[in-house]
Image 1 (cartoon, rainbow, N blue to C red):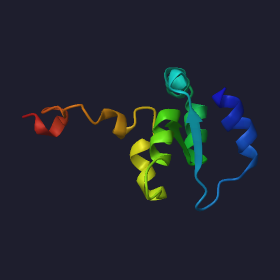
Image 2 (cartoon, rainbow, N blue to C red; image 1 turned 90 degrees about the horizontal axis):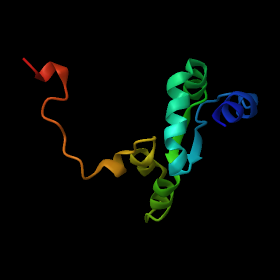
Image 3 (cartoon, helix red, strand yellow; image 1 turned 60 degrees about the horizontal axis):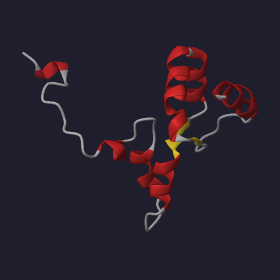
Image 4 (cartoon, helix red, strand yellow; image 1 turned 90 degrees about the vertical axis):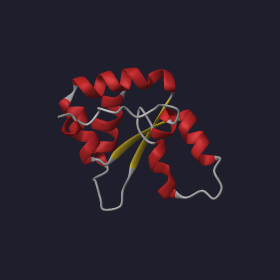
Length: 101
């Protein structure tokens, strides 16, 4: 799935300044994509070199429903664990190692 798309099809389009690639996934495919990315250093390197970003369908729909639609406001919607999906979570007190004595 990801390997064919990123390593073969889109590898023919060379990276360029200002070129951003967005991979839209169904939410039920997020864990499979995470597993593939974690287990393949080649795939991770290709995603980074090709300036790939992942967005899930519901987050893309939510971003498209915004008014005005600005590309700069897309960042919180990106990723397999987007920031907009974690709004209700409380930050941990001791998440940062330098904060612990």
